[in-house]
Image 1 (cartoon, rainbow, N blue to C red):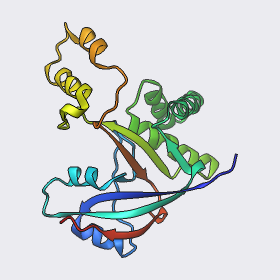
Image 2: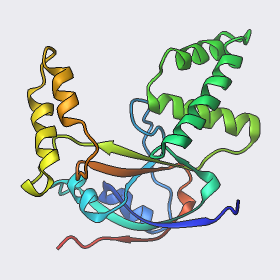
Image 3: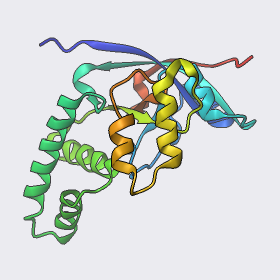
Length: 211
């Protein structure tokens, strides 16, 4: 299969002074995330409105529009179930081997992965392993975040009942509510997020005018 380049318009929210350096071509501090998101890297949204939602009314922040140019093979797509399964299988295989290491630091980290470490930690672990052992790794992570508290409208009726579940859930009702509300449906409560580990892949950077 051909390894195509993808060109994807993206938006980054940051402090004004950081974004000024970013559009001038500098690398700026990314996230050191190791919790339940996409691990270390620069976080970007796939559309302006989501970036504006994240920025909120912060007077100290701005939004930069940029274009990500990356090979398909360098994108870890955690929005696609088959690739998630492949990633998980590879991750657990690496951890099972590393757990046998005589180095206590290596075996401890591997054991943490096998005991259901947070997503961000696992992504960082895998990336660092691939870079060290294979001298290459993915450069971008794509994932989808669910924001059930996002305001919706009657046009997205299924989101309204999902909001009700999110706000009113109780243990004794949880199973019934989940069966009723968590059916496949069109939603505005999911947001696509990109985590870029190599900022040189982000081209055509410019500050967005918000008026």
